[in-house]
Length: 308
Image (cartoon, rainbow, N blue to C red):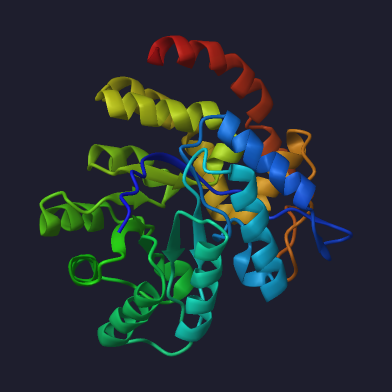
């Protein structure tokens, strides 16, 4: 198993559309990924919730995976998101991601029927047996309908070779504490709940999986750098400055709010796919009132000096 030193800001690009949402805009996707890397992302994670993976056809999913991995070009790790109802389809997509060069996959089990722990374990074990790259367990019961206990996650990391790390998105900091306790701090875990970022770093998170880096990379990077230095006075200050936007993104839905924010920044990424709708005029004004552009310009030099 190759050692993947995954840390810091793991950024989630949107999947941009053109032609009224009918076509993937691969040129804009490449530009967005390039911008994320230039703005300090430590890894890129296409085809997560932000990337609207559940709304893509098989051909579109493969196109986004290929274009994303090609654009990253091994400059930072690429972690491709996989969330499928069936183990068969999850394996098929995991194999494709490995074949085109992904460094890891992030697996979110989703289900119509409630799965037992035995079924969840076997789902991950089967995917792991089919590929040789690391697997990140993704726990997000709000979207998947499945809640993975810290005990189950720790057992999978211990007993399934490829399963090596965890993205925890329940918004419950106690889950992270419990994972740390169960593994004596040996399981790398990553925060997937934006409003929990400060607490997660204080609890020992290796990184922050966030879509907010598309809009306020100076803030997200500064929070990580201050936390890495152990300067939680500055980390706390910068976190609370970005918290209103982090809450807005979570409440409004990741693809919807990030695409609206990109539009305010002059980047055309299209609208989310139906049945999701763009923000209404009131919501756009609310997002605009957070002064993303002005705030970013004002803070760049200040945070650079503070961190440096």
